[in-house]
Amino acid sequence: MRQRVKLPPTREEALLLMSGLCVKCEQCEADLRDKMRRKGVAQADADYVIDYLTTHNFLSEERFVEAYVADKHKFNGWGRIKIRMMLASKRIDRNLVNEALEALDEKEYMEILTRILRTKVRGLDLSDSLTRQKLIRSMYGRGFEPALTSLAIRKLREE
Image (cartoon, rainbow, N blue to C red; front, side):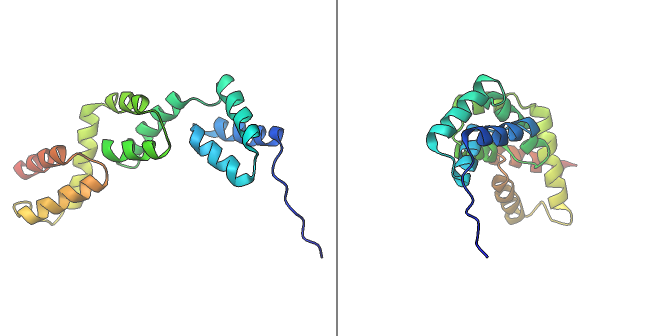
């Protein structure tokens, strides 16, 4: 039995595939380009698809960044540092990232940080400096600033 060779999608097929993704949820240009490259779409066709999606408002880096920042913070419990790093890996404009991160509600940011810390500190002795350092490192890994983490730990100790 012969094996069929799968041909790369045509320009129109790539446009349909990528526009379908954009309709489902916000996408960024870098992710779409990676997906098209993996499917074997020619560079010129990929450029056409990106241009079309941007022109017809299927693709918007601003919308993507706002949605990404809100979702990763609220649902994944990520801090500003990790969000910034992940968006940089997607080659997103630094100014867009800064604007979206500044739009985060500071009170909500601290509430999420404190909630995560509360679950981590159950049964731990917060008077031990080694324990506090481990907590700060752990929260730094989630993208929270060490100074804010120290402040939240201090408040938890006072409770």
